Amino acid sequence: MKLPKYKCENCGYEESLDKNIYFCPRCGDPLTIVYDEDELHGISFKGKGVWRYKDVLPVSSEKPVTLNEGGTPLHQSVSLYKEIGIKELWIKNEGLNPTGSFKDRGMTVGVTRALELGARSVICASTGNTAASLSAYAARAGLRSYVVVPEGSIALGKLAQARAAGAKIVKVRGNFDYALKMVRTLATMTTETYLLNSVNPFRIEGQKTLAYEIIEEYGSPDWIFIPVGNAGNITALWKGLKELKSIGLLEKLPKLAGVQAEGASPIYRAFAEQKEEIIPIQNPQTVATAIKIGNPASWRRAMRAVKESGGVMLSVSDQEILEYQKKLSSKEGIFVEPASAASIAGLAKASLHNIVDKNDRVVAVVTGNGLKDPESLMKIDTEEVTIDADINELKKVINN
Ligand SMILES: Cc1ncc(COP(=O)(O)O)c(C=O)c1O
Ligand SMILES: [Zn+2]
Image (cartoon, rainbow, N blue to C red; front, side):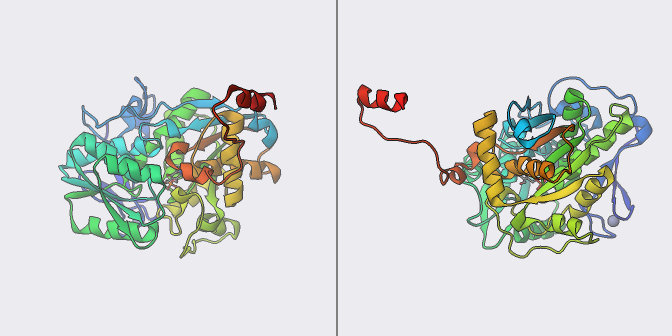
């Protein structure tokens, strides 16, 4: 098989994968890994999870650093699809990955690459899930991990995961965008500490297996809805879908809907105002801390994905996010963190505005497990009573 190479989708620059780089030296955009289309045609897969797609992953390792990521359930909606007003809704539950988010798909490939390169340690800036995932995979690989997080903006469960895995936790006085800028600069100064944010092309390769799984299991939906923060995951999803078309496993590409939180929605704003460039948001705000990002590194690739697919960018309020987080649990039994509910809240909005049709078949990706951020749910109204340890008291409650 012809070796894959780096390519800049923005300006066309190409480079061999032997080099350890993340960004295009000509225009600064994150690099993508590309394969020879002819070589992809007719490829087949075996096994389960991310490594089922080994032949379209750019690492040669016989022994990947793995926790059996991928192979997540695709649940058919039993109730919300009716309320939203569409024919079929399927929910891809990425919160059931080993560390509770989709990041594991990218991390298994990224940390395997780190070992191949002989890195001594790994680093990321994170709104929480990347830190939780990186620290677990680094622990498994025997690598030191550093996670740089915005002080006070990380959900408790995610911080606990990084602490347990033994990461060095660096809290920055500032938001995620500052943290990412710092680790990006550090990555230009050393090769011993490998950068594993989604600007790393190997992370995107792992994450594209989300598309492979959806299409192999379901076929081709009319739409795929996905939350957007730094815009790596929507980039990976679109890359995977386009590869599937090249391979001959997908005839018609679905439309993509990327959903941002209102207070952190620079890509949505540029899309809505038909601007060529985003205007970064200096002080992003949202209850969905995982997507509280004002200057998304992969915004160009996200915008291209949405436009090429004939889809849309959307934004949803914190209230809508929390409403659909609760509904996913109370109507479907699926407990997700706030950022993940953005995809369903976005779908409800798209249906209301006739962006999706009532006959459309939709897959919505929910990206992270609700257990990571229980605090967000402690503020909502629930049915709770406290009673004495007396059976009559209990009977009174049940009879009500
Ligand atoms: C739960 C969850 N959903 C969505 C996202 C957004 O993904 P991306 O930054 O690749 O757009 C993140 C990123 O941290 C996340 O943790
Ligand atoms: Zn370039």
